[in-house]
Image (cartoon, rainbow, N blue to C red):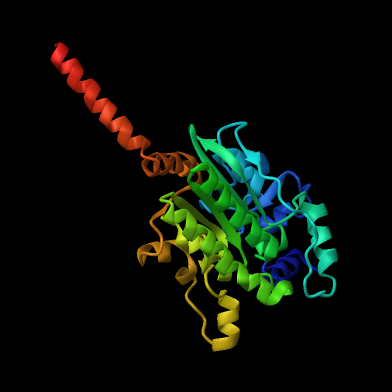
Length: 302
């Protein structure tokens, strides 16, 4: 087979120049951007917080990677949560899949929660991880989110949740859907106590997770290009025979139509959250008053 014929066959399979360059390269050196399909040196990608330096696409982060670039160094203290397998319907092979994800990811579930500081402001933070069952929400995920809200209420701290999920976990059926109400009720108690709740939408956030606690934030931020919606595009196409424009289910579209307060690049997320937290806790207002008082005192002395 000629080189042209081989290239043509690869093209028909959808392979790009990046795929061809990566074919004979060790997997731990390079990574392909899901958007532009360019090969990126993995160390360069990590230095850039897993944002493609060529097209700006924000690749997904694992939960502890997210915590490391958000919380003050050494400040995060993870809450102890139940790690017992939960298979209320006796769904076939579900226990094995959970065990496999726990072994592969080192996580006990699709969300990690704990207390930390962000530029000195104490907060409770929960971070979801798509690598565990697609970030899907079952009983344990809902319980952890609710407990994070309860911990924030007990400490009188604000709450931040980084959302990343394919939706409700089908193996738990109605019990997984009940977590929408449970998490919303827990956040309602936080709101009644006058405490702030901030959500950050990351790629991807869908279905029951978006329709419950993700959309209840006092401030809702999102990363650029994050896919989000109530029903995924493939499901819509199969059931309704409608192909949605790609831009409809993006954070930019939702921001344009008032569903999101701001789109924040990953490199600016920590400082943006710190600024929002300071306003939410009244620290910014106190600093402003003190600064004005100091200015007046200096003026009088002069």
